[in-house]
Image (cartoon, rainbow, N blue to C red; front, side, top):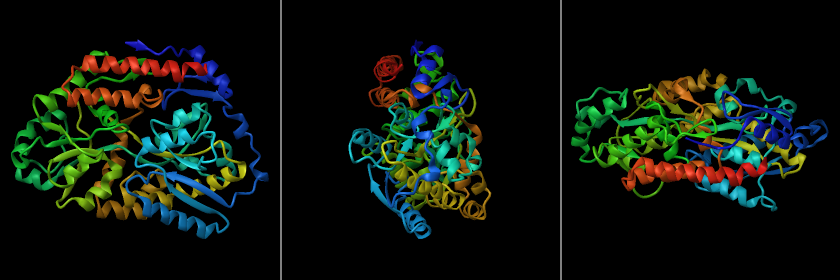
Length: 449
C-alpha cells in the first residue's frame, strides 16, 4: 500500500491555512472544525443588495438546457431585478471544471459553477469558492431538508461548499424485450455471478457481448466502484492508496477477464456516451448508466427499458453517489454572491428539484420532494425513476484518492481503460496509477501544508 503523507498534524496545518483545526470525518472525506474561509463567511449579508446580473456556467447535465432555461424564467418572474445568464461552459463536468480553473484570476469567472464530485474539493483548496453557511442562514435556506448524504458530500471544515443539484448513482439498465427473448426473469441480475450465468442467452439474442461499458473521466472510475467495492477492494483507505490490495487487484482482474476472456462485456467505441447510444439502439442488451441519463434513454430507446440496482459482488451491494452540485465563486463581489445565492436557493427548492428529477432522472435532492405529489406522479408513470431513490440505501462515500486528489479520477480511469482495452495486467496498470496519484498529491496538496 502507498500512503499519501497527510497526517493528522498535516491536516491541522491545512486547517490553520483555511482557518480552522482538523479532525478526520467518518463521512464525506476530511472535515476540519472551525471557521475556514473566514473572509467570506464573515460577510454581513444584511447590508448587501443583490446584483442585477449573474452568470451560471453549466454543462446541462442530463440534456437539461431547456429545464434550466425554464428555472431561470421562473426565478426572474419572481425576481425581476436579477438577470441570470446561462452559459454552456463544457459538454461534461471535466470541461466545465477545466474552464473554471483556467478562468481564475481573470474577468471571466462565473458567479455560479458546476461542482462535480471529483472537482469541488480542488475548487475549495484553491480558494475559488465560498462556504455557504452564512449565506444560507441569511437567505433562510432549509438545509435540513436536503438529503443528508448528498448535502454532506460537500462538507469540509464544518462548512458546505456547494449545494446538491444534479445528483445521481449508476443504475443497471436492461432491454426488457431482449430479456424476454432470452427467457430471463424481468429484473436486473442480483449479482455479477447471476449476470454471467445469463450472459450467453443474452449474447445469443444480440449477437455481441451483452453488457456495454462506458469510458472516460468522471465515469469509468465511478462505475468501477461497484465491481471493486463488491469484491472487497478500494482505491484507498482514507489517504492510503490501496490499489495493490489483493481484493482491488482481484476486481481489476475480474473486469479484465469480463471484457477480454469471457467476453460478457465490451467497451463502447466512439464518443463518451457511446455506451448509451449502443444500448438505446439495441446493440447491447444492458448497460450501467447514470440516473441522470434515464429520461434520454427512455426517449431514445425503441423498446421497454428496465432498471435495477447495480449487481452485488461477493462482499455485497455497492454503489457510489456522484453527479454535481453548484458552488458560488469567491472572486465575485458580495452583491453578486448574494444574487447567486438567491438563485441557488430557488433552483434547489422542492418544486424545482422534483421537476428536474422528473425531466432528467437525477435524484430529487430535497427529502420533502421525494414524497411530493409531483414525484408520486412520476413514480407512478415511470417506476424506473424510483430505482435511484431506493438504491440510495446501498450507497457509500467515495474513496478519497478519486475525489480529493487532483486528477486522481483521471489516473484511475486511464488504468482501468488499459485493463479493458489493452488487456493489461491490473497490477501493472494500478501501480502506474498509484505513482501518478502520489505525485499529484505531492505537487497539488502537500505544498499547501
